[in-house]
Amino acid sequence: MSVLEIETPHGLARAHVQRSGSPGAALVLGHGAAGGVTAPDIVAAAGAAGAEGFAVALVEQPYRVAGRRAPAPARQLDAAWIAVVEHLLGGELRALPLVVGGRSLGARVACRTAAETAAVGVLCLAFPLQPRRKTNPPPSRLAELDAVAVPTLVVQGERDPFGIPPPGLQREVAIVPGDHNLRADLDAVSAAVGSWLRSLAAAG
Image (tube, rainbow, N blue to C red; front, side, top):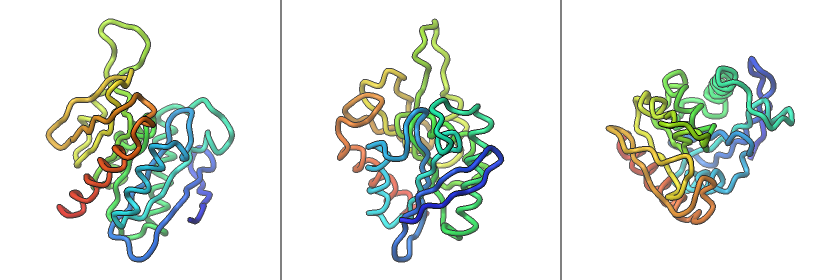
């Protein structure tokens, strides 16, 4: 695995890139709001992707590289993510079809920027469908998922307090044991991700 430090419009980001042989595609994943790229579900998804012959890049946003826990505003997150993906596509992941994604906050970033990154698929781990603050009715982030125009997989814990997104025209939802952290059954996470990536690669 190689670790790259990448300049973005909002500070230094970091990408952990793993590829072997001649990968047929690449998966780029971002982390959650207060977590990092070592979250168990991210590691499980990365392992499943590697087993399917994908190159994998795990991306740390500038605010995390700088040691801050509070996320940057959405526009900054999106701009930094796009800059990292463009850098990777110009180098380590050159000429590879790209699947983007992440867990929770990282999934939202990937959805919002899927068109700008020319992604062929989006992988969402624990997409936070609605905030946990109590309002009636609770605000929904479903529009971010619905705006994605390429095949999408959402892996969601059956007891996720942020809700469970519905399937869509190009969106599959794999419900696995556990809650928002997706740690209860990492084998189920790996199986769902691996199966979807395999079918995506076959269709492409």
